[in-house]
Image (cartoon, rainbow, N blue to C red):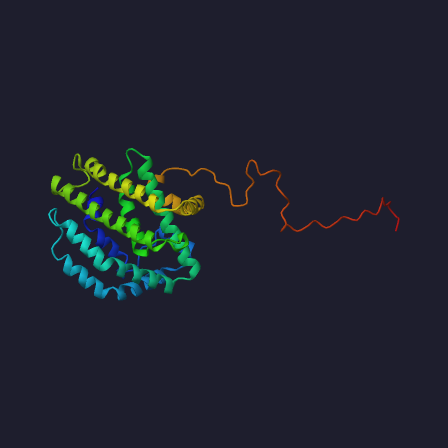
Length: 292
């Protein structure tokens, strides 16, 4: 639970984390390898992308560090976080989108937009559906949501300028509220950790309503066509990503038909047009031993 508070208190810093990855070689876990395989990238590619983005962030990082030389408090967090988002938020989005689009192919970039959307949507839905959500699902919502904010709305959803502005304002308000909730928990449980009685329950009680409101308001921004597109993408969520979601750990995914699988109501399946036809057997009549 201390991770929830830490992530929340540095909401914007978490956004910057994506812009200044460690230069040390990342440990290749099975999850990271699955991601690299999905995008046909290597560990060296990942490190180079981090170097590229990091090099573009120096000026913004100075502005950010100057503004947060003194951490936000319950008395000033709304003004402090709000002004920081207004100052550096759009610039971060421009840098990250630009560097990713330069480094990745068009197909890889669209896949990245898709995977971030799938992960964020899955986590939002898990928080909404469960009365007592997994705390790690709450934690995961924050950095994934901030990655979504850093990249901007997926291009394939074709947001209007009005939708983009409404989404930005919603994300801004949510980051501010998350920071405030974390400061309240820190004040209520000074020096608390995961084993502090009551801390986890208090954190869930404060964070969950913020995430639920974000989900509700976000859905109001979307058109019916955009909602249908999201549903289509959620039905096509890859197994490795589904298994990485905290709320899916220890579960087996229900069987899902492939794109061309027969489904009830489809009628008799047609012959595969790509299947090689069996050569026609020529019948010559009965032949007897010794005959020519």
